[in-house]
Image 1 (cartoon, helix red, strand yellow):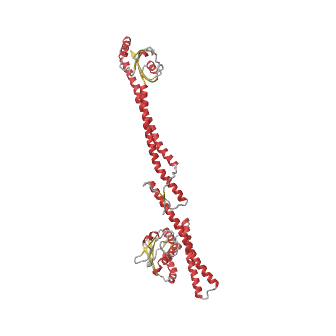
Image 2 (image 1 turned 180 degrees about the vertical axis):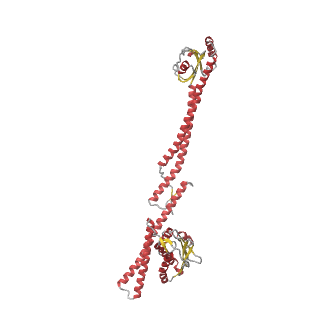
Image 3 (image 1 turned 45 degrees about the vertical axis):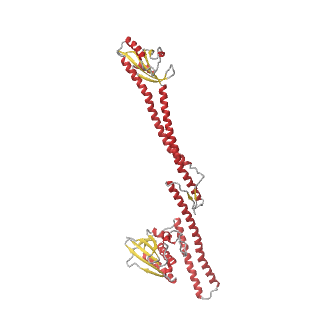
Length: 475
């Protein structure tokens, strides 16, 4: 009984594991990196660009509100504006003169300073609202500033400037990005471990199959792998198990074949050697005894020749040297030659061989005459060997349209139904006790198939076995 194994030593198939993880996790990593980059850009625009645009818009609006004031009205209004400014906790409102110095500020500490930041220079030089983000040159703090020129009749009077710190915005931005990175890391970890589990569910069974295949290659035929999954891995397991059993059966069949052939070869050789030595010694004085001995030698030599020919044919089939010499041939003539060759031999064995000819003229077929005659002789020999106890064999030739059929029937015990599907297999002998190598029908099947024909074997009504050979005819 074939034993099943479960491999306990885990064979690491690193190539599959590495490629799988690189392909799956690598793709997810690229997607997450792109998504994180896109999200970071969007958040940067949301936090920083929005703040800059908002300050720039407010500065421009305030500058527009002061455009109708005279110089004296401007400075008094600017002083009042910084005093009444309600957003002191969030940002700083400044009014600068044309030199860039802060005259009034909602933050008293900034008054009298000269920031000299790009936004101020843009407002003074370009006479346009300008926003800037960077480090304050006096405090070293990261800030966003927006400056807009105040014009009176086209002349620069002053600059209004809004300033806000980026500390809170930076913290909010980096917190959002950190949360996004953690989420991406969680997704990546989930993908990695789920793929790792999935890869293990593939790699470990493959490792078991690899180990078992190695044992089979080393000669442990018939060994079985424990099936754990009903999927592609399970199908591969079934295939390997089936292969293992077939190799074991083939090995067993081949061993039995070698033993059987050795016995079959030894028997006729023993008879030939024994009778030859007896005749050579001159012990047989009666001519009838000598003739009987010679008949046995001839019969056993013919049987030995047939066996050797079958073995040669099997060898040619196995290594691809089995060929046909196809020509237009007379099927009836070849069949009749085989019948006439065996009729006298069967008569001596007490077997009646009846031949029913095809009444109409036979259409030629494309085939190898020698190979087909070999088929007919082999089938007649089998009929006598296995069904000769019925003492009768019938051979019939029929032509039906585009095919010709040969029926060879014996009246012996027939073939057990359970053995019928296997009788054409190489080395198969079934329950028959008749002598033979078990490859004759396999050779016949190969020859008929190469002629694009069909060889069928079954039990006939009323007892016995019937073999049907159907071959295509020329049309």
